Length: 107
Image (cartoon, rainbow, N blue to C red; front, side, top):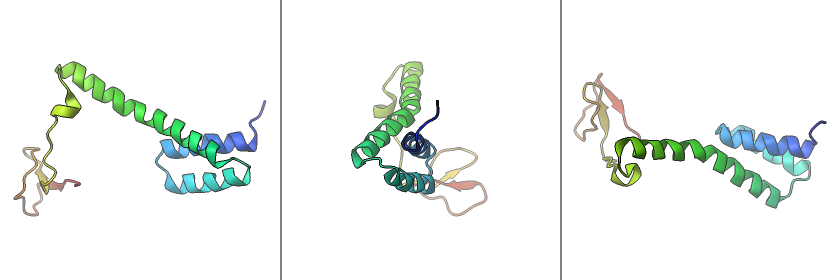
């Protein structure tokens, strides 16, 4: 048994989303449209890929909660205004001038 062109493109779309590959998604989306995949079928493929992709994140959060005996996501406090994380402490600071021992923190 071999997959049809439509099935191959749906699989490729899911893999593209799972791999965070925008050029891949654009390519396989267009090939999928050419293969006759409807927008509704695309939406279902996007939804399924997103659900599969998000499962490990949910599981790691649940595991952190279980190990620490609390609500990891609600109690986690992150200072998003911090501009740097000194390598020696690992704690974000607001007053970190550019130094060799700092790494940037994405805001």
